[in-house]
Image (cartoon, rainbow, N blue to C red; front, side, top):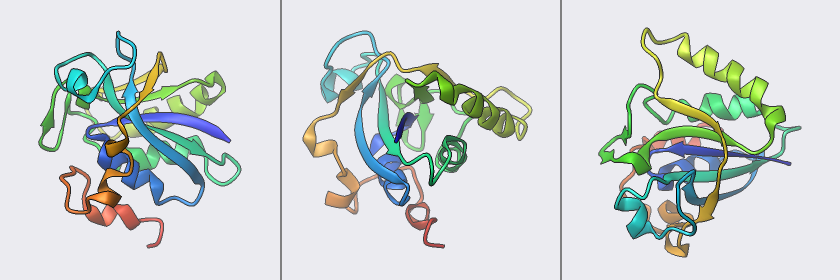
Amino acid sequence: MKTIYFAGGCFWGAQRFFDQFKAVKHTEVGYANGPTENPTYKEVCASSGHAETVKVEFDESAISVGKLVEYYFMIIDPLSLNKQGGDEGVQYRTGVYYEDASLLPELEAAFRREQAKYPEPMKVELLPLENFYDAEEYHQKYLVKNPTGYCHVAPWLFSIEEQ
């Protein structure tokens, strides 16, 4: 099992998106790479500096981290700074964060492939994970509990593995 962290705008949609893949064994939403410990959602929304992030634990024998990054780029606008869909602010920045440096070569290769599609630099961070704090329980699996909740991710993307 390996773990990777994706900040892709609102974490509700990112979690719902990654939950569809059989090789993804567990997801959890939280707040990453900010300056303070254990922020609340209210603090994150008030520009605490944390990014809404989904922690993805996956079976690396069934899916590569490069493939997960390829999927990730399907749900974000990599040229948008601190904004995805109708959500705007530093907590909605995009980024891929890693704890395991052995993943870095594959992550960098995936970023190079994606960057080749654009004439301007992408606004997606690729950084070591500094910290990750679980979000409040009501945020976990939010779009499963609230299927009509707002999300910038197009609903058809929640079932691409089946297609």
